[in-house]
Image (cartoon, rainbow, N blue to C red; front, side, top):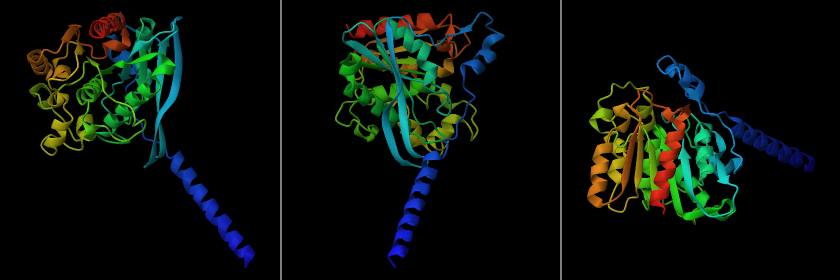
Length: 328
């Protein structure tokens, strides 16, 4: 009888271990279409002088890559670590920090897309933090917002380690990442947007926002009137069309969270008006509240300008100058 119970014990242990191993090895589906290489191919014919920006660490910058900022428990894909990269000036001091959110239509891209710009800004005296977040194949809206808020809290929890002034934390985003950066930055203090994904004893408040070609209002005519199919990334991410889910489309539109206590915003635009949908209206509101905004435009029909020379350097300068101005 004793042997029987021992056999049962070991069998249960084996089954539990096997089930856990199976759970943690399930691969998250990925869309690999949004890459620098593919963007380069798309734009090269009309812009033969462009060159992809390189991942090249400046001499005066330290790097720490693939740090875990939170672990999501019991997701459909098992326990899930989310990562970030930190680039910080080698010279000791207290620096402002910039959380950087990549684009890719909420379904593609990764944090590596932000690295060349992050390195350039770190060389100028900003601690830059490029973050991973859950894409729509893994989790729909508002999961990415909860992820990024958790990353902001991680930055404050580790401020001393990386020489960060925790009173000067900004967020930037490119394209879909711009929409997310705006939403995270304009929902300071909004409890329902916090989530519960780690470092909950720290604030997720943002003191400045940088939006690179990211939509401000999903319901602005330039955005809402686009032809969309059921496989459109915003429809998939938001769980349905505007007519099916109007309350979610409004909830995910950063402009509806702006108020008289919102922080300054820098907009850097391409020549595609649809990526700025709602921007003029938000700027008008901010002006009425006496909140600083700044706009720069590359008058080119090239959306992902931040990935390429000759636009990455002026983009870095715009961001650096803006942060110096608002954090002086």
